Length: 254
Figure 1 (spheres, rainbow, N blue to C red):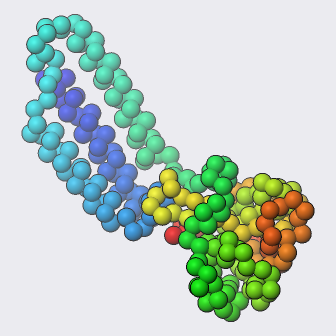
Figure 2 (tube, rainbow, N blue to C red; figure 1 turned 135 degrees about the vertical axis):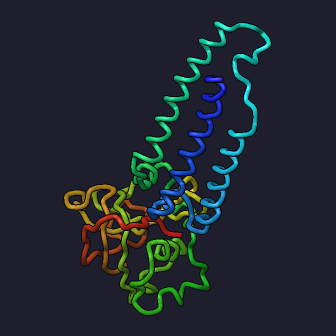
Figure 3 (cartoon, rainbow, N blue to C red; figure 1 turned 90 degrees about the vertical axis):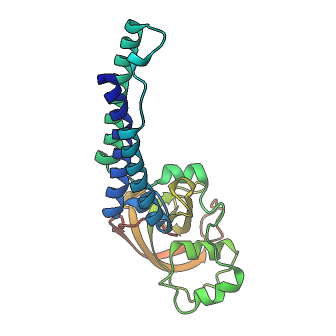
């Protein structure tokens, strides 16, 4: 009976830890570090339902314990049960630590290197939407919006009156890391697993001295032909201001 209880309890505790983690992340505003906000309600509801089903199953579904083993290998079954118990406790502790103790972190430049910034220009504006996007000074538009426009190949004359004011994290331009960095964000379509980095190049020689990689900055300035001789980006921001900031509560864009 003891082994049968442990068999019930281990699985139930693992499920409840997962449910508690999802509910905690949602209530603390951190679930957005993992999934798109459109899935918040669905995820929480399904997590709660999974917890209820697990409790009901543990209470009413019979589990096979060592005393039900028809092979009669009591000693071997006992040793196996002890190892399974130790393994389950370790797994439970590791899961609890990962989900409830270790704070969730955002994606960083190491992920940018793996996924290639602006490779898909996620969420880029359609060509027909570009004039409306740039109307006025454009200061209200995000990294995602500007990256989409640059992806379309607009020139400096088109952006002559634009005054971008962008917030993002610092990641180096792989073609000219000494002089150019991207102010970047991750665009989440479904969850963090499919997040795609987008960014706007900033020409600022020696930027590493004041703005470490992965630090968050607010950049304002104007678009100019990129002075870099090696960067593949035809336009870059000539910054009038690059100010360090704290990471925002919601670091992703959608």
